[in-house]
Length: 173
Length: 444
Ligand SMILES: [Zn+2]
Picture 1 (cartoon, rainbow over the protein chains, first blue to last red):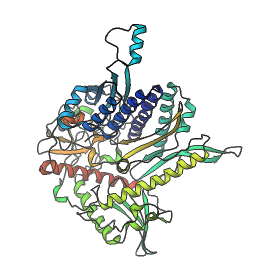
Picture 2 (tube, rainbow over the protein chains, first blue to last red):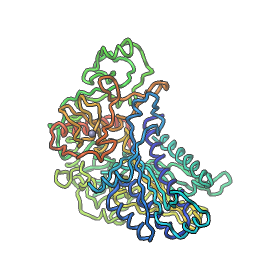
Picture 3 (cartoon, rainbow over the protein chains, first blue to last red):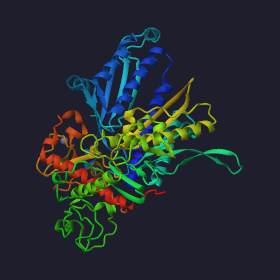
Picture 4 (tube, helix red, strand yellow):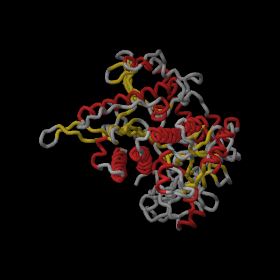
């Protein structure tokens, strides 16, 4: 396989991920208005990060505001998976024509918020992934009814309101 | 290249329908929602879209095909004596052909306004770890040997120890990039020498070229796109407002518009034609890309895919994806250079504070990817830049793996860094220039 073909195949795979994530999240969501607003906000936030290579305090604040405007309270969890190609170099089994043998390490909400607080932006690079998960922290009426009938107990009473993730396409600066 | 693009498209379609198949979508119908795919390359682009043809029964059908390569060309006509076609590229390289003062000419080269000849490395010593084919008998032959210095591709005792006798005819070790592999030690200086000569020629012979003369298919672009309805001398090259290497220059802005509207007009045509012939009732349209996205298209190798009219419940999914490739051997952009310093086992971006020392060299980020000699498939990948023990250099954790960890330094004030940066950029462009001698241009 030629070098240029590998290059093109790599961008082809990235292009596919760009379609599949939104399609899947769109098809899974229900038609509840608040749910739709939350899901849309999450998708827009992630797609912006993918296209600019950075999380800015501006966009993050906008996301939080959109969420609180629904009247429910939410907990936002961010996870950035940093692509690290160095470990693969020590592994002699690495094949140049296999894509995706690299390692990732994760950075979570609190670390990202800390960086946003100090510099106003959190930079990502091409190949990193960003994912967001939004959960209800108050019990919606539907949840309370469900809990009443099925007596769900334990700490896991969150209702996941939205989830979205994707591969970053550009180096942030 | 055409085969590569075709292979990429079939991979794309296959992966897409496989993934969609899992989600309950009909695999075979997936393609109906993709009115066009665009591939932009260094000097032109491919559009993949359905084309009207007749089947064996004489019925009109639409068949997906890769249309002929379009160069980033535009024609400027002043009168019958001054009538040229210019082929732009993703950077400051241009090809010119046509009539100038009544004479037919063909010329090509890089346009520069800053002569940095005295600021670049006059003769570089480059050490690369590459597999070899045979030992050249003539020291002036264009071959690199092992971790040899290019200035003197001669006997290397270390190398001999590793791979055996020097005169072994080990043809299985092919050069990964053949002709591109030889690096002229004076590349950087020669880049500026050639570029300056070419720029002088252009400023004298094309001083009449104006943005408002630009035409395609015998129509003035100024009539359809206001960006061309301006009085701007494109080839009045100067360090003030028209430095061709500066993306905000008159030249670069004009070039971006040429590329943008060539692509936009052709894509529009392809998508509209598909919409008219499609069995779907969905009205396919070229979505508006914003300026920032067009800048990315005009300065990178990209793939732009459209997906439209996918029914989801009562709605339609409509989207496009712009993906760029910043690591390839087709094109070296200033952002795609990584730097190494003698004794440092990490490679860096130019503005990293951990990039230090007086002996700094830059290379295309593509050169830091694992390489494989093409014939011996069982061979481990090798790396072109290694430390003294032969271990591959690693990406710096401060500036490359996670760039939140460093304070950018002003590298333009640091002599060693400035020299390394301009030398690397000029050398890589010169290598590209010498390799493009083999490229055929569409002269018609
Ligand atoms: Zn660094």
